[in-house]
Image (tube, rainbow, N blue to C red; front, side, top):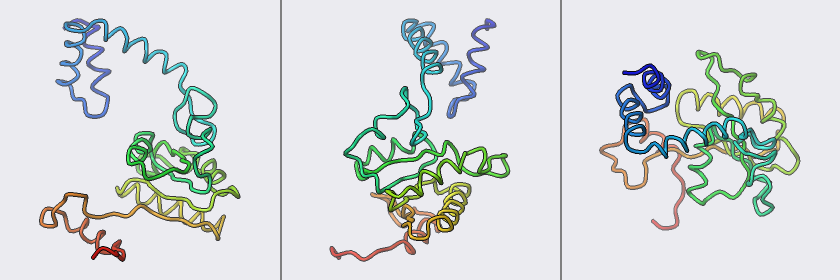
Length: 201
């Protein structure tokens, strides 16, 4: 294997979901089958590294000072949804159920990994969340131990800073199309405790 190919494989295998073999297959495919695509990927990635930055309002990625969602007057400024990553934001957008504003933490609190409030610039989020127009903050961090701890920590800080602010958390439970016998006990427990009244029973 040439030095350049080995270096490419080493770089690509650091990406989430790519091991050494997948990275090697990807490099060989681009060099053997699609050099035009390889060139475009290299040029676009180089441009993105230079031009993409954080939105000054929501901290998501953008090429301008403000992203398209923060400049959209049709979005509800009274609701602020906080997520861990831009990918989480896009997942919520794909559901078409939320039309408010966002804040992206770019991570989650994880003391074991050295990620604390300072690393996440939590003060910036707290300032954004406690503005007068915000009436509800929706905590949409992931349901991992670190994600749950982050949601709890943020909720405590928000309650101390803005006692009248409505703070909600995404519900947890059995996924659509899921069957109870295949769900783990923790998922069933969350679904049980997060149950709500229904007018269709």
